[in-house]
Length: 377
Image (cartoon, rainbow, N blue to C red; front, side):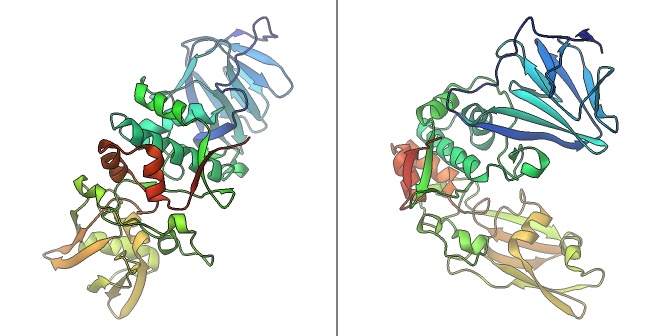
C-alpha cells in the first residue's frame, strides 16, 4: 500500500502516547523477531524516523514492514532501522492480527527480522492486562486488588527485556496483555481508584506474584524459586480457606507413559521403559519439589515445576500433588490449586470480596507485612 504523502512534514501534529502527566511509559513486546509484521491503521497515523522525517499512512490499508538488511521497508519506502508509528488524532488504533492497539507503535530491525513494540502509559497498559488476568465480571474489590498487584509486578519487572528494546512481553512470561479491549467499566474503575498504588516492603517495591488458586495455602516464594536470600515475610505463604469454592481447588489429570517419557527427554532420558515414577521431596506445606523417575537403569530427579510445564500447565495445574498412581497406560495425578501458588490467590480474593472485604484487607491477607502506597515517579 502507498503512503498518502511521500513526505509529511507536519501540518498536523501526532497525538501523544496515551498516558497522564507524571505517568511512567512502558514498552510491551507485541511481535518479537518476526520475518515481517503486517498491520492496519484504524485512523490517521504517521511514521516518524529518528531524524524527524514523517510519512503519513493511509487509514484502513494493510501495510507490511520488513528488514531490508540495513533498515526497514514499509509501503515501498526505505526507512531507518527503527521508526515510530504515532496517531495523528487521539484514540486512533492500529490492528495487528486480531488485536487493536492505541499507543505508539515502534518497529525495530533485529538483523533480518522485525520486532513490534507498543509504548503507552502504565495505567493504560493495566486496562489491557486486567480483563486478561481476571474475569472482569468479578467483584470490584477483587479487581482492585489485582490492579495493585499487576501494577506492582510491572514496576518490578520494568526493563527485564531491555536488550530486546522493550520492558515486558505480552504473554505469561510477564503479564497477559492484548491491547484495547471492549469497554469494561469495572476494570477502568479498579485501575482508576487504585491509580499509582503499589505494594512495598521496608521502603522498596515488593516483588509480587499472583495465580488462579492456591489450593488451601499460598506457597513460599523461596520454595517455588529457590534463592540464596531469605524469603521476605510478605511472600512466605498464608493459609487460605477462601478458595475452596474454586473449580481448581481439587483436580485430576492423566498422562500417558509416552507423555511422561517425552517430558523427561530434556533430562537426557531417551528410550527405555518407565520402571518407576514417584513423588520425591516435598515442602513442609505439601508442595512437591521434585519427582523421581527410573528409566531402565538410570534414576533421576526432575523439578516438579519443570515437569509441570513440560506436560502442560493447563492439565497439570499445580505442583501441589496429593497423590499419584499408575493406571493402565500411564499415570494419574490428583492435585490441588492452579498456578505456582505464590502471592495473590485470585479465587481467594474473589470470595473475600464477595464477603465484603475491601482490597486493602485482601492485599494485607496475601502479603502480610507489606505496605500499600502511591509510587513516587
